[in-house]
Length: 118
Image (cartoon, rainbow, N blue to C red):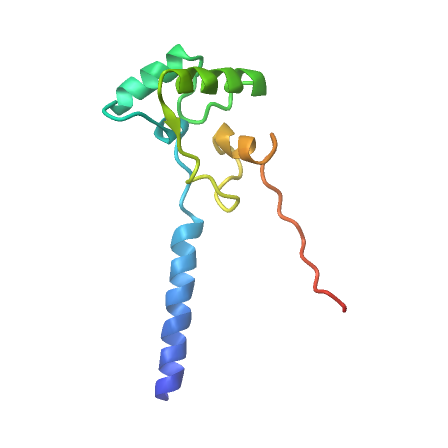
């Protein structure tokens, strides 16, 4: 093999490996998305339950209104919500309700892209 072919193959492999590692990274559980300085995970879960979350992992048992109230309660207690782990490529199936919240109450949908004929 020539040097150019080896470099091209190595580059393609590195690119594919990078894509594979990020595309299968699941979003955080809902209790992992809530944080407050100095508050341990078990306390976060307890505060979430106090605010109306029954399922602190996915919270898929809450209606849209209940989820909104639970979020407002957590924010009133000084917690911050980090949505950075929720992306279209990892929000599918039985993903936490925060995935649906980001896409207008629905799971993100793939949209067919057609090439321009111009």
